[in-house]
Image 1 (cartoon, one colour):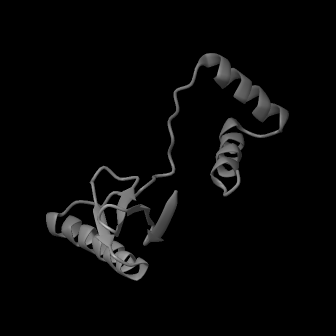
Image 2 (cartoon, one colour):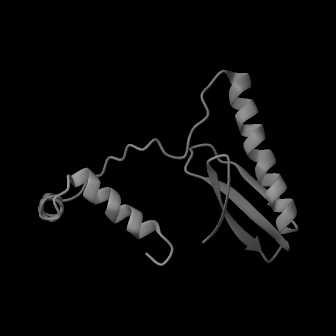
Length: 112
């Protein structure tokens, strides 16, 4: 997946062969914010404008802009997986939170 980031927001970027343009969509927020450009430079500029416009719109409406992630993650997993993860964390001398953070960090690293 190709992505670009600006002010803490990340967008997925794809090439639309039919229309011969790059298309982007901001990830991790409920609002659907998309943009496009014929060149990478134009796409980047449109992405930055989309973020700026989103933040201005939130300010005008008096609402807090969504952030892609709060740092709080609630997972529902089968009890047997929860138990095995707890044992693995304890065996590593870590809390389940520390252990899960490291596992997730490894999973999202390139080549992870």
